[in-house]
Length: 378
Image (cartoon, rainbow, N blue to C red; front, side):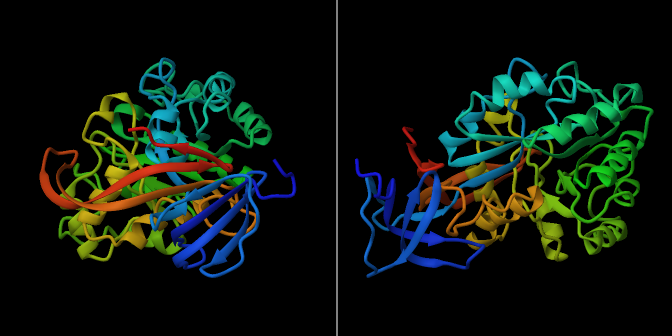
């Protein structure tokens, strides 16, 4: 191999990129795991040690799943990161609170360091996260603020703090866990990623504590006390939080994506910023399946292809404050997803068992992860 050559040249790609607005045929060059060149049709291309001809297939920045659980056999819920990552077109998976400050070292050693998929973390505010059950905030003594602050300052894979604010988790401690997380958030200048569900605490009380850059996940769950008020208008506290600059994440999960709530919310102008799965072993075989399947549901609910791709590339990179993923630009990570969209009928189910027929399916051929081609063998 010639060391002066590019490592990989991707040709005949229909590039779709929310960051640059590219929507057309281009070639890309990768060198040392980074995007080194972007070339329009007709340009003279550099020599390369390897060539991937996409023959007109779509190419986007590598997909990012902002909310999943990838600590199998450790946390009470989890699934292998590469199973729902690179094998499904996803180059970055963010684990949403499976581990806390006392279990992060184990998570880093056995999950982050052993996965081909990039694995990042929303660190659970509770010391052991979900390694020892799912009511981690029933006792606020399970929070060690000094240890959390120390760990976050040392570990670049941690991008914020996860707090689960539903009644089964907090029991009688209300918003105490969120208040602790917000104290750390202000001190460390990092976002808080907040699970909402069964109340109490009330969604309004949760939202009033959030600031610019914080994220609410499971926003379109169909449970009482959700994003719309009794008149099916946007909850005032939610609109105020949006005006302050919070982000809204889908977080499909087993119980947290209602077609009817999604539709009602969009009719009122309420849109999600990011599409995520909340995948783990118990919902991998339905109703969630994959990030691609979840993206298809979002298109079924009226989101366009550019909106959907932005919600799994550019928007998550902004939430995570990582400038070199989620976009196609020279110098960015060589993380890319290539795919086609097929017109094939399929039945889709939400978290409440409601079904709809859709006709747009992603066919994922593979990913490029830091310049390495990983072909989908399904």
